[in-house]
Image (tube, rainbow, N blue to C red; front, side, top):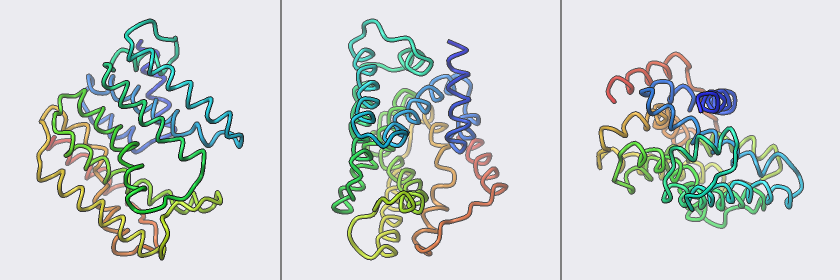
Length: 249
């Protein structure tokens, strides 16, 4: 199991360095849970993009749904460097929640633009919101709306940062409307969600899970004020924010 978790950590370090830094600022016991969860998220997020064949992408996502079904049923689970440690931390509820996350990723295969802001925020909630809620619930959180609001904010910040790359890949990631207005509006939605999460309060045991949001407000505020630019985060200031938030958590 140690080797599997080490492999998961290496995968997150390569594919999601911001989450890696946030996880390394949490207690060791939480790292053993978060690294498999975030490695799983990377695998699922990549699945629609590693092939141009929709059927193969569907098969990749189905493989993960089948693995989650094995975990949810409590029976024998396939041997895999991510699935094995994931099965050690997930309960049935968590496996079923993550199954909906995988199902939501099918939209990335189809490549259909979101029909409305509501459609896009629903997708972000089912992906980033579900991921953060699963992590926080396993760490002791009980306030799902607050955690999902935090996940929505973090997910919107990440999504807006990815818009230029998605456009380069011939995708139309934004709902209909003037792009700058849409970006500013989505950032404002994210800021409001972050404010709701902060006002609600989070269980102390789960606060380290939220270290992944250290730069979220800065990113969203930059998108709201300057929707035509992708914010450049100062690495030194980012480390300071992460360190300060880790001390507070």
